[in-house]
Image (tube, rainbow, N blue to C red):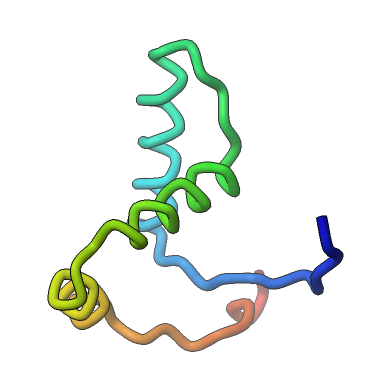
Amino acid sequence: MRSSPKISFCLTDDELQLVDDARIRVAASGVLKNRSEIIRAAIGVLRTLAQDELVAAVASIDRLVPGRKPGA
């Protein structure tokens, strides 16, 4: 496995809640995964989308300002 730089992502509170909800759903099936693994699974699902589905999904989200909120 190659070494890569640390990368951070901006998520809304609702998106983070969806990740946590997915963790709970998976755990209910006896599989324990962390947030990173859930997001990596979602990235894998992106590979299965047709071009128009991917464009529609990306168009449906708002751009976030990168970085931490002041006081965070």
